[in-house]
Image (cartoon, rainbow, N blue to C red; front, side, top):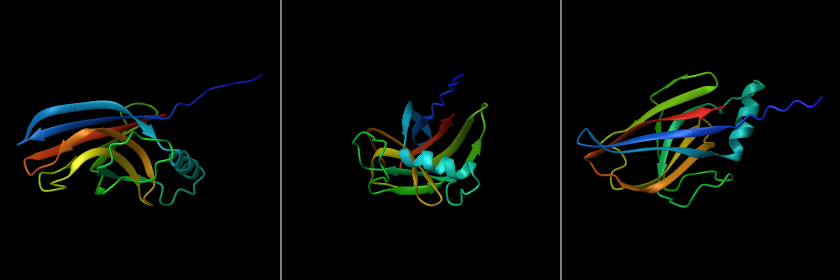
Length: 145
């Protein structure tokens, strides 16, 4: 008997762009999980996961579409995740924000989830968000097993 139960690892990024505290744009889209994320998960479930915990959000300037072998963001601004929740069985949601005083002058084209040992776990690209002092970002990133 052959039993197959394919686990599709995927993610969903939600970004709200605010100008002076008012939402001006919302993006919700799936993202790419990096190949090294599977390695991190294997270490975690075996109990050898030191450094493999997702604890940061990163934004960068590279608008080229993600590939499974991506390992870093370009000209990255990196910040600690604010919190995490478990919205449903097999899901973890990371909540984050980028304030009006952070990453100003950056044309944000990419987002990434980053582990404590700087492994790029997931990446998403998009059209640029011109980050100025009147712009803040808030959102969540859900990893679904």
